[in-house]
Amino acid sequence: MIGENQNQFEWLVFDSNIAIRLLILIYTKTQTNMTEEQKQQLLKFQQGELNALLIYQRLAKITKHPKGKEVFSEIAADEGRHAATLRSYTKKVLKPRAGKAILVGFLYKLLGHNFVIGLLEKGEMKSIKSYRPLKGDFPKIQKIMDDELRHAEMAKSLLT
Image (cartoon, rainbow, N blue to C red; front, top):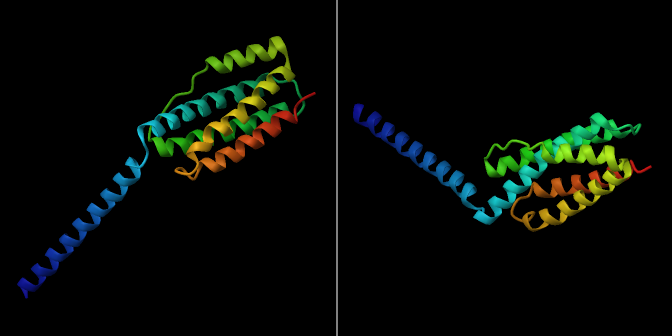
């Protein structure tokens, strides 16, 4: 009886080891599927989304447009989700950089609402083109691209 239990225990340990090795293999495979170039692109996009979050938050604070605060706040929240999505691929925690947000806020005050809206619309459309090469390998990128198009339309709706 003891020998039989011992044998069952050995199989249980053996099966557990196989399961652990399979999980490690699957995890490693998902982590190494991206090329170094793709990882660098994703990190760049992640940083860009974090910076965009600050830009839209800043614009939400300073806009005088009746719908501006609501629209900019919604876009900012989306940009934060985009950064989190990209972080799920890169496994890196990045910090937003305030420089562009400060510059865009200054331009908004200096050159006006419509000028900055035009820049934002162009930036959103440019980001769609930048993401396109990665969407085949990273399925969540398509949702980001769809959102960026929606952001461009939302920004355009604020033109006065």
